[in-house]
Image 1 (cartoon, rainbow, N blue to C red):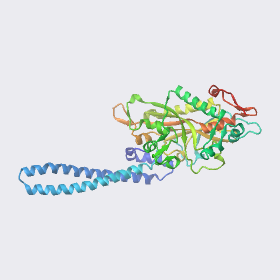
Image 2 (image 1 turned 135 degrees about the horizontal axis):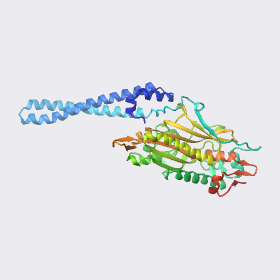
Image 3 (image 1 turned 180 degrees about the horizontal axis):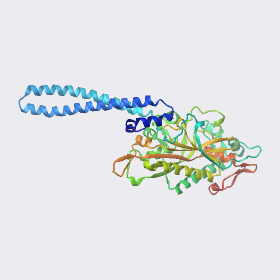
Image 4 (image 1 turned 60 degrees about the vertical axis):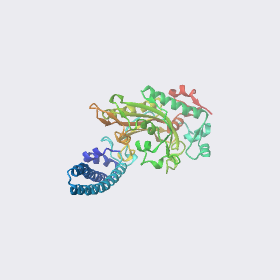
Length: 424
């Protein structure tokens, strides 16, 4: 949630940045500042009447002691009127504060100045492309056919057990999954990230704090009896470890990593482009999360990007880095890089990581603060990134490394899998 003080004191800057979202900025900001003005004027009026009420309470006693009964009775009558009017003002103030908070929750984060203008994914900026796109042998297949032929990926069994979009892995496919998870976790630990094993369900307060509610409630699985949500990413529980915390400055940066399954309804996703592992309702992912001082957060974002690049290079996958335009960014992000790998059998790019700086958007919601040099509490910046999401990584690895003899395993993974080739 954007800081009200920022919207109030820097309206022109806020409007300029939010315009990149392709939304009705002036209407949003106008409503915000109107509600804020009404709230502040109501608070001022209430404070004045409360002060008068307190003064009258002291005066009545003095008047009675002085024998000025008529004046004391008049003061009592005024006190009764003030009590009634202050109650009305308190109710009005509560309503205005709720309306203001509800409205602020509808405003997305303000894009960073570096974020390009654009409305669609086609307008994202390609920052770089690296690696050689493989040329496959005749008869090469997409990963869903490879998994069936080799007997380690079973989309049909997932349908039988649960429904479409819940894959089952077995044999060497299961070992490949476990190998990738261990590889990603070890690389993150080497980079100084502290491993976390969080819960896989969260409460509404946690989902609100990181921006999933109220923006993405339709994309999350909701356990209604207990009012808990299955996590769409480890970002949610890991970042919320620091909700309502006030840190000392020397506690930053905080670097955390966690592996979890991720659950996403992906409502409305149909068609050939979502076949197999391209878009599923449950997938494994290793997530890196950072808490930073504001002046360091964009350097941290670039460092996280370099970490993900290192993983993709180690996996020998051709990849490209995109800087998302304002119209394609997530609701809570101030700046996002997407990393895509090339799927040779499908001849298309697959997103495998989003790395985002949320600036104070999440920390304002979750009241995550640190003490500055002046000892005053300040909002920290939060960042996170996939390092990496397994489903599409597995798809690209299988397709790009298929040979007539079997599916080659990249050298970096072989110590984790215990084999160099997937064979029938």
